[in-house]
Image (cartoon, rainbow, N blue to C red; front, side, top):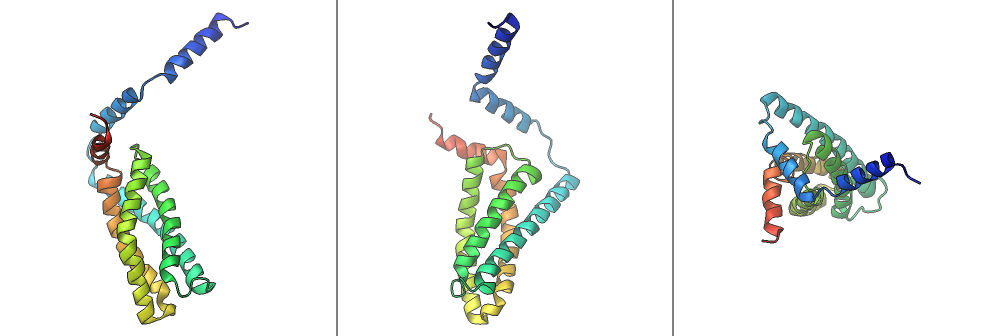
Length: 182
């Protein structure tokens, strides 16, 4: 038999659980809207964090791409496939850490990941097949250099995409509003 304190606790828990998503969304929007613009120092620290996580993702990508393409010879004639596998591993790593620590994003995670996938579909095709063409011209021993050039291009464009699209609450809110019922 429950005493009145236990009943009150259960009622309070039930009320807490029934907070609507709209109220939570409005709280998030209010907190986001009230945030001050970033100082130059904060922007610089954000760039350093992004760079650090990108370097760790680059290590993952270079090691996995090089392992699959050159060291094991499994995908010796398929640089593009080794590149895509390495990129997929590094994207998952980079997205997770940059969302949480660099941009401290609280926006819609499925939408953010979809935007990252869209970016990578756009950038991967030219980098993978362009890299494949360079490897065909320069030879398989230059796979690491080709991967490094691809990483530099990817780093610059991904930072801009993440900062101004993926983890920008105003942009993602506008995108989400396009899919909400009128």
